[in-house]
Image (cartoon, rainbow, N blue to C red; front, top):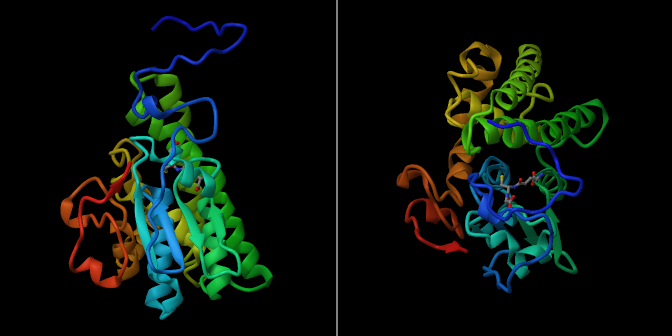
Length: 286
Ligand SMILES: N[C@@H](CCC(=O)N[C@@H](CS)C(=O)NCC(=O)O)C(=O)O
């Protein structure tokens, strides 16, 4: 590989050959007019079953499992491979053009929420669940929630990108981000040696945020990198991962808006709990 000398001013080469390259742009804002569908529930979710998307569908399914009928929701697929995140209605909800994005029509004026961490906090506060109301337990929960928001870009945008998606394997990049990813797994492993869940004795939005990234990585299902990162060696993370994987709400939440993998694990749109039994397929916005 020849060494790259950056020019004085960076210029956009619209195709760099990497996966997802055709939708990457150096500017924000919508690329096209696109109306979003709207269902009957107050909560309308526009998302995809990536780790960031799964956080929100797991949270909603957990709230429903605890009997909060107000958490009923309609979930629609935003296909980020075809640029649906740049449609005008979606950008009105999330000016950052990334899934997940949520609308709450039960407030006096409709509320838009973007950024998965903000969505988890909003729902936790709205329903009074999965986030202790004060004191050290709340601080600990928010600390791990924000740890996830700050750490996962190194796992996804760093390690995952260069290990799985970049058009060429660059040792320097893979090495740098594998090192950081393993350090993060060790942070989690040491914490989970001390307590059942990240914030202490109770399952919280911190676990809901961290599991779809580091739990799924530990199951070997993210970037096919389980062996490479020796995930088996993080025993406490594995114990926590398997326990959370067994929760019914997690099994349901993982299916919603999933458009890849086993067809039996995909529920493209979700409007009602019964949809898990009578699955409606092939409804993808894009
Ligand atoms: N910090 C954001 C990250 C969201 C994010 O990166 N979403 C990705 C999918 S996991 C996305 O929509 N990518 C589309 C794009 O970058 O164009 C969050 O947690 O909500």
